[in-house]
Amino acid sequence: QLQGARPLCYELLSEVGEGSYSKVYKAREVGEKQRLLAVKKFNIHGDTSDSGIPAFMIREVALLRKMKYFNHPNIVKMRETQAALREDLDLTLVLEYIDQDLSTYLSKAPASGLSRDSIKDVMQQLLQGLDFLHTNMVLHRDLKPENVLVSSRGEVKIADFGLARIYTFNIALTPGVVTLWYRAPEVLLNSVYMSSVDMWSAGCIFAELFLLRVASMFWFSLVNIFRFIFVRVLGLPSEEDWPEDSPISYSVSWGPKVSCTKLLHNLGQDENDLLAVSRSLFLFSSNVSVSDLELHSKRQADLLGTELLFSVLACYAQPQMIEI
Image (cartoon, rainbow, N blue to C red; front, top):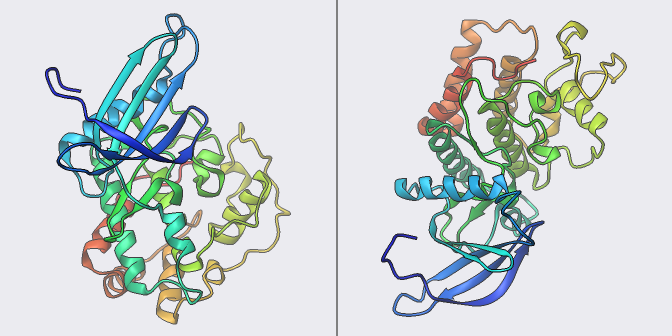
């Protein structure tokens, strides 16, 4: 809150969510504007003089303050912060209110699925938000439908920066990030990762927009998630490429390889062909010809639209997208 600025006054209307350290309320601003607000209240019990404020809180506040000045349409906006130190530390974030997250949005979709135009629109906005974060050296690290908001006007906004980090090339990053179903291979393998972890999560969300459910939702254990990714999607790497400190031992008996086009049964032929070529770009020890890449780019331009094409190609241009 800026010195001399009057704090926002609001009345709490209802509780809309709860986490390990916070509760989120729907609120209405008191006064002339009468805006709806999302109020996220943290409460740290006990004396913080020795342990200090938890790092995730500091990161979330710092990153939201930084994002606020850029006013990006696909990043949730923070209105102000409020802190009070009594017996406990109370920290409050006042954010713009968006009436639903992507998970709720998908639950309201017709049984026949979302239209292609709706999928394109959601993904284009999501990728634009991610591009903005990555350009500013920010990793979100917990991208999932519950952390992507969709307004009644169709605006898509990335939210919840509790696990986000500003990264540099030499920073040591925590391996235990991202909800399991959206976790990239390099994170699962305790390997080096950068912005590619968010791109993998975005790809999982992309599949979910077609399926109306998590692509790997029936794979509950860590071992089965490995099987899903390395057998059905990417292909199994060689044992020499498998990291020694991986939490799961290498196994050649994980079953036969299955084409990933069968994961999205409601795609058309052109879309299945595009998915197959996309998959070949990420397969281990794959040899992709220039003609394949040209064909891939053309089909992306036809199916996704020019602006989204550039976002996807920017993802491919990153070196060592999957580092093992």
